[in-house]
Image (cartoon, rainbow, N blue to C red; front, top):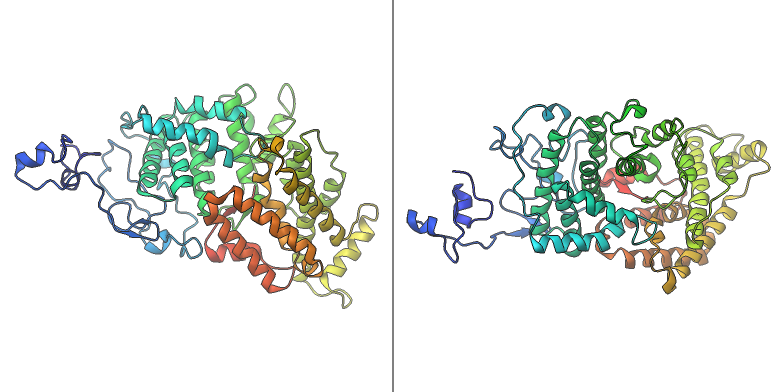
Length: 502
């Protein structure tokens, strides 16, 4: 007999079919055993279940798909409880190669695929998914509420049980944290996602891609390692090859085009702190493929990041050893948008300049001091000689950055600006500004602006405080260090987190 999924505790433990009669099932009565009822019996620790198949997990690692011969075998993923610690600041050691789906591309061949046993027509779950569309989803992009992406996700969910369940799980996580219900629906989503991948591995299925990206989003909301999922999707869809040969062609398929852009944004190395898996350079290669499209490269504002694609083209190179990048940032002409959007774009431009200089300073600090100068002074001297027309001091750049951040703070308090989601994207400039420790100590009034921005962000993102708390604790450590050369990447890796700041 197949194991009951929603039956009483006794039947589930005995892997028996349950008729779900209440308060005691007839199956237990007929066998002469005590029916333990339907209430979930769990002992809690660190916000997750400490007994049962979800023991110690922040995100459950599932077994093989339903119906496969290996469905009763345990996963091959490590079971070291230190990898599943509920404390985001001390998650313990991790393996960069281990996938939380316990799935590789070779596992997609063969195996029986059976219809997913879910509750897609459950009114309670449908209500939660609709709540995700108008609340939870709006935490994940930075343009304007009511965007076409909300309709797109709703339509795609009809073709993907995985997308539906992960939407429900994300909203549950935002509402109540890692509850048992949240973990169960994440498990449903992962199970459905694996089945869909096996059934659709030969084509770019927008609905399944969307489900995978939302699973990544659930991980990154917790600060847990998630770039391995991007690598997995890259391998599955062969995105490390020629992007002009994709099927269906993203030039004529808006859902696929959108999912590829989101994947490319999440892959950008400059937007992830403590990254484990290397970037595959998807944004640059996707933009290169667009040069062969009938209408050329896509223009305008990318929906998730809230940034113009022309600005993202520069940020895609910002971790390269290219001294022309600062010039490109200064010469970026800008684009037309909402006034607060323009302020956000200026924040990114100035933060990008500081990021390029900080990278140069870190490289120079590892070399021999030039003529007895401090590395920062040597870097400024070299830049003045190379770019005399475009050079501005760090102090001036930081001042302009704070003026734009202050304008964003005040602008977001106006009722007519409420539909704008630009504050979702403030983390990148906030992080870069926070790392200018020496200048901040000289300008206490700028520190007050920084505090206001942080407080306003926390107020708007109160339900994702787990990862934000870790990020802010790292930035506080940078302040305590008293120097500008604080290694943010090393600090994040030491805490075992990957933090998205797009």
